[in-house]
Length: 383
Image (cartoon, rainbow, N blue to C red; front, top):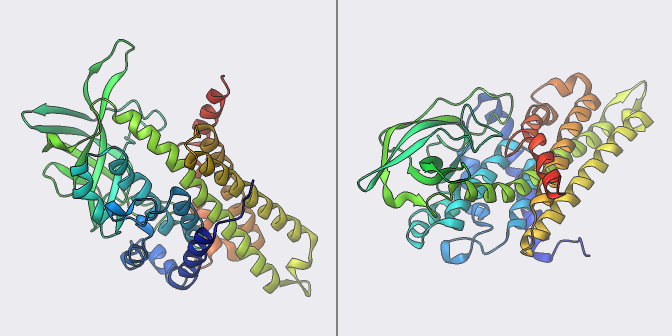
């Protein structure tokens, strides 16, 4: 098994690494402190083709694969997670459902701008009363002639209220229950600006401060019947499959944050002196950073393995859950240790590790909590 990157993948990785260091790192702290969405950076990522990485050229993409997206996310998150999650959500949650399940007409209408990064899409699954239990959807959609009438709300939706958001795909109850007691849940695309569709002010968040996250409200919101995405009644199943893929992407993002903690700690260990010597000369610091590197390395292998199974067309649900669980743990542990290495400076937002510490916790929650990942792994083991 060859774990070295292909020439094409390595070129992409190095290109994104250079972009993150030169274009993102010098300015992202100011966006973060202001809680401001970095439109200029997103536009540059679009021009680089990052939003089109896993999509075919027929629909305006770069003709790459999902692993290419993961490599880009890792390199971005080594510097900043707000930028990385904007790309991850825009691709795997915004555009991918349309790419996977949309009709050719829907793809032609929505994908070109989404894969170019000129517009952003969002994924409306979570509700105020239903996070891990996403099947407990309360949002409803009923057919009235040739229109869906949507009522309800969604919570914690990334990329849903930016100036360049074009569409939000939401799950809604569209019928009764089947013999097994399962409700009919469908996915429906709601264009931004549709009457009856309102987005809240941005959340005041602990981390990811330069990304866009909002609550959504639907009050007799009417969209054409043709905005149904995929098969009626299959919306929940479709979104679960999208989440399986997305967990690999979030694992890659988590690895990036974990590795960024190592990068910053190694640099600081050379520069900072205590008791007349660089702190990196003390075994206590050496061992702490060695453990951080081991976590990042192991987590990277986990998401590489999950991505390999996915691209080979093999079942990968368990491997995706393992990757997400291991990588988010690594991110959280490394962020805590990096903050300790930096001491008081690690508690200052002007240093990247301060942002890493704030950003890490959500990785154990978003796109499936750590507890949900353990449930999935156990089920795959037949328990």
